[in-house]
Amino acid sequence: MAEKVYDLLVIGGGINGCGIAADAAARGLSVLLVEAEDVAGGTSSASSKLIHGGLRYLEHFEFRLVREALAEREVLLANAPHIVRPLRFILPQVAGMRPALMMRAGLFLYDHLALRKSLGRSHAIDLLIDPAGIPLAPKIDSGFAYWDCAVDDARLVVFNAIAARQSGADIETRTPVTGLTSENGLWVVTRGSDSRQCAAHAIVNAAGPWVAEVAKLAPKLHTEPPITVRLVKGSHIVVPRIPGADDAYTFQNRDGRVVFALPFEHDFTLIGTTEENSSGDPRHVAPTSDEVSYLLDVCNRFFREQRTVRDIAWSFAGVRPLDEDGSRNASAVTRDYRLELDAENTPPILHVVGGKITTYRKLADAALALLQPYFPQMKPGQTSSTPLPGGDLAGRSFEDWFADLSRHHSAFASDFLRRLACRYGTRSIKIIGNARSETDLGDDFGAGLTAREVEYLKAEEWARTAEDVLWRRTKTGLHLAPGDRTKAAERIQARLDRS
Image (cartoon, rainbow, N blue to C red; front, side):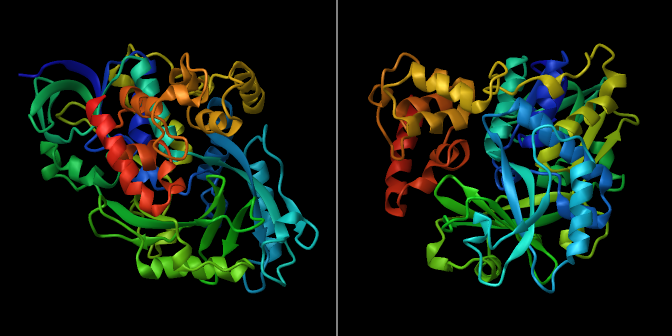
């Protein structure tokens, strides 16, 4: 017997699922989101941490996707200023790579495909004069500069989940869906280890790399052409900050692929990504030695200071579920999304295939437009002008808001407050509470992570394991010495289990 009937059940707690849940709940639908593991536990926390238009997609003539993504940069800068920040990119010009004339033309389109409000325009740059040339290898003397944005990808997902909850959605993590049946015009959904059931008028399958597996649970699709995706693994490595590399760098490799080197977590440089077809379990992916060597080779060819395997502080990989378009080269597979609605002889079920983190909000809007005929009571969407949780700075810039926060909490170290502000924005006050200094926030697990923050992450952000805390909700694990990570994880897990 189904315990409750929802308007919409969303399967998948990545950026697309949480974005759809937040939008649907804000429009007045009753929503349940279920995620088999942790919020942002898969692909959505293993990206290159960028909100970008996708300059290289212009080579594949994906003008609509680039235009949409460029417009979304502005929306996310306005709505999530605590976790989305402008970032200057340096594109060195090297002999044998894409011609300068091609790059000028591509950057001109990049500047003009969508309205720019907050970001500067691209221009040629003399790397013998500009400080951005200091970390580069000798003989790299010219290139281009353009702008995109950095983002904390996992936190973007979490804030969308919080927004969904604030609008009335129920969020269940560690809750796999095990059965879908159609009864009396409703979907009956079996979920969790205890086989609980609920019903929904419609389903959105936003399970990312597992979208095809979830689709098979719907009875009708056993006899229909299956949902197909191309699974492409992207790997990244993190090394101590390349001296002087305070901008982001876009490197054109000899094989035509692009590798980013990005300032990351103040003290590090993030290098990625590879793009390889993947056939393994998306839950258990890691960079191979060949991928690590590839990224190091590109990095070392462009930078003066060399990095080796011994310098790697962290590495991670994620599997992107891309729309299968028949491309032979994984790098050429479209990053656009496809929404496939099945509503013949069953309640509606919408399958989300592909997409990129930058355009999640537009994907959610398109998904709900397809479902609108089934929910005439649904209100218009307002996510384009609604700040995400923590991003409501009352019209101030992040720095102006942070200056006020620092004045009101002057006994706290500025670096400590900035870490909180960059993770939680205005929700930092939920952690600080009535504390007068850091010592009032309880045990320090290392790198400024306190017991009060861990308790907040459990109560407000669905954190259940030390990995959730150290590597997704925060990046504290990166700032701990390798020998200290295990001890910190044990103490955090004990706190999560008892608090």
